[in-house]
Image (cartoon, rainbow, N blue to C red):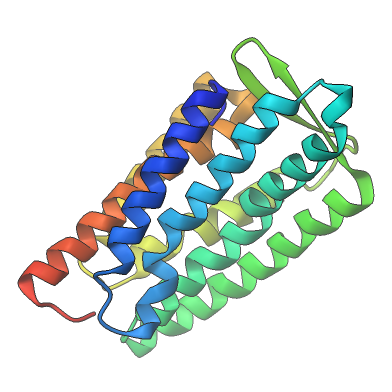
Length: 217
């Protein structure tokens, strides 16, 4: 997350534990992607922790570049694809599945767009106060459009899902995005990903509840 290396690594360790415990509670292979979200978030937090330790140090420029790009690929390209896909895999309602296919297509589109921009234009990360700010080297006229599509792909599937309590994730992610945008606009990518990582604990609760109640979804 954007506050310190120690905080990022601590979040990474906790999310690894939570993700492992969540994966232990799956009942069918289709649940793996959704249950594995905390593990992906953990990896992302570890990457930003490494960035905290290497940023601005010429001796570790290569590692800084790798951690910056991996973090942003996860944040901007993987999540808008993984979230609708993971929800789609556990969905059983045919009508809802059709909607999720559309959101997945939108996620793939915006994910590939961000990946293309990252490869074409590069990115520069710097520390501002107690935050990491990712500065795109190219100005985009599609900024508002791509952010809207990104939010639709990452949040809307959680409301479309018929799985019990998944909508809670959507509410928390939406509110955390608004809070991040208001208070941490310049480092939105980093801060919102931290809040989203914390949300992974809700996923553990969903699987734990289903496991205790012996509910299959």
